[in-house]
Length: 432
Image 1 (cartoon, rainbow, N blue to C red):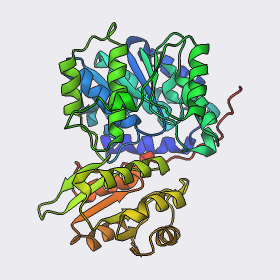
Image 2: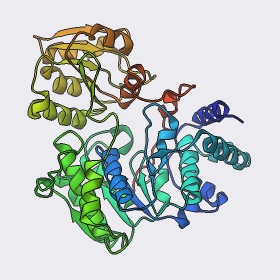
Image 3: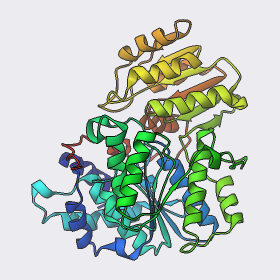
């Protein structure tokens, strides 16, 4: 097996869809020797800000001298982004080696219990982190929390960034229902931290924490106002994510001592591509790349564009592509008013919203703007090449494509973005 064949094998696991539950993951992890038992974790869930908070925690503990594993999803360009140690991507050779190992174990699974792609990758990551003898693993959920494959671990701390509307078709139609799914990562006696501000969602987290005797820390805007590091990730909302990371480090001081200097250095040097990432091209053109993949993310992007002096100049050209299972109308209504030119495009996924459907939403939200439908992101970037400031937003998948087109990332020899695309089966209801 070579790397291209390993990626093709992982593609094939997409045939098994994405069923939710922990039994299959636990069984598969047991065949791998339960590597999670050799590791320490910080488990991170939430609607938005999971990746940024994970990146900050990783940077802080790496600055403290620890060997830190980082598990996140989706990837922007390369599958290898999902599994990192001290911000070094897992090598192609290790992907091949672990994929071959996984394949041999999968042969004995009957079809109805066959592990999904995410379950296989979860166990692959555990094996890799254990082999690399990581001191700590920053462990991001895939979807939800209660039934997410990552939930087979018992962490040092559980973190819920926030609760917003997203993935309602699987997690619930109210913030309380969504919170119940996210709060499923809370373990007995394990500290839980959250920056959730919605009262309906926070009550659910508080009740779950009390039931599990899990000490709860709530991080709010007061904590965020004390984060002043100038090199922090762009966006006012990142101060709250940073405050959450700092609070987590504080709660874990007895287990993982870290000096204030390491926390400061970690926050000042954190890097998280595709989230309010500013790119300045040789000709002076500025591009801001931001996943902003749901309404709350769009609000955060709009707030940054309006409040941050670095983006106060006009005009703004917006290139927008959204997945159809998002609240497309709301996202257009939020983002369209900040731009003078809007190019709507398709995301490279079967789940994409049609640009022809997005255009009327944008025109209604901003009648003064020039709105056009682009055949592709490549064409939209070409149409905007003379515009001084371009914002690309609406989906992390779109951002991954932009990073390839702009030569911002090493492009794999195979197209690996489609490994992000999945179709879930039914999501079992929570018994309250």
